[in-house]
Length: 331
Image 1: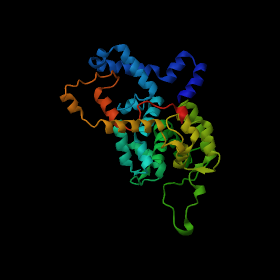
Image 2: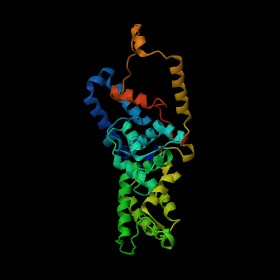
Image 3: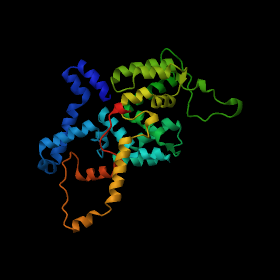
Image 4: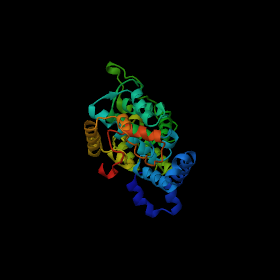
């Protein structure tokens, strides 16, 4: 759920419901755990300052950088933040028009989260490819929107796949479905597969997904968006449904991590920061070692809720953009 939705809903929630929806206790627990694990590093800067910077990073959505996968996927906010950081760090790939393989996208994600599972990346690629040809290169824009759907709604989509498979096997008590596979190679000539008969009945699929949404509360695409996708076709395959979700602007806006497709490669703030950094390098080409030789003292380090090593990596990876996240309303 994005910040705008929460700002609207919070006035109708009780205190306990609001704390649960915003995962406040999760972040408090993690902040205290990090403080205890690295007390020698953080205490010297002051506990109050540490907590202030920790929650500032949560607010700015930079808190997931270089954290373990268990933390990155722990809350909807963390997932959206990670998707946004991936976009901002590697937007230039899309801008240059490069096509990357699944393995290459997996490597990029593991630069930001070292234990990010390759299987999740492969599942995102299947939404684009709709087959097992996982060595095919994919454009940045196609991959990132499919990755967003797969990562943000992972548990929901796993349940949707169970429903889909049940319908293919005719397990729905009111309807008999003839199993067909969308991944099968089409026959040649007059024996080619009639694509209108592939997949499952959309109306039954929609009804079953509607019941699923009630169990997942806010952790699913909006029912109206799902209806818009399924009500315009008689039959649908699992991956074509996921592709439609990935392309749906309403679903993208609800997550609040990425801009619309037309603005995906546009980020003026990041471009200005890149120009500023390039200008600094051009004007001041001297190395740090020469400055130290002249008796120059290093500037004092700023307190951070992350390890110094992680902070240095973060500066390297975000050298082409600002560490301050743009508000989703700018998208």
